[in-house]
Image 1: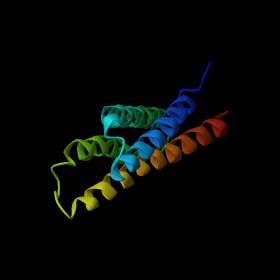
Image 2 (image 1 turned 180 degrees about the horizontal axis):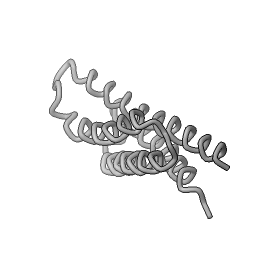
Image 3 (image 1 turned 90 degrees about the vertical axis):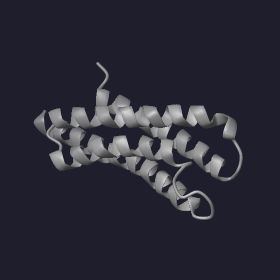
Image 4 (image 1 turned 120 degrees about the horizontal axis):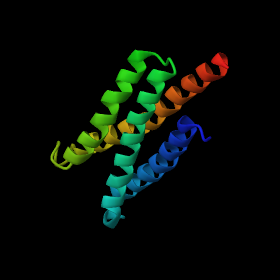
Length: 125
């Protein structure tokens, strides 16, 4: 049977990197036709991060880290949806950088949770 943690880890790695690349393309002024694909991939990353946090609870990962992941998975899409209305004008780049960091953080949180969950699983075996 496939380990769901490994499956989610790869989903987030692939979807997250592609979404980050699309976001950078938008920032550079191209690829606006791919906005809905970017939003879909971002939603996939957020949902997968939520699922990873739930799986982490059953594997003994620190509850504080998992709580952070739950909050993070809600903040990333919220900022993404609202970012066109936040700090319009010359300061909009601040929101873009913040959203970029949040997306990268979602990928990093997944890696941390998966690593700790898999390490705990190996110790238990």
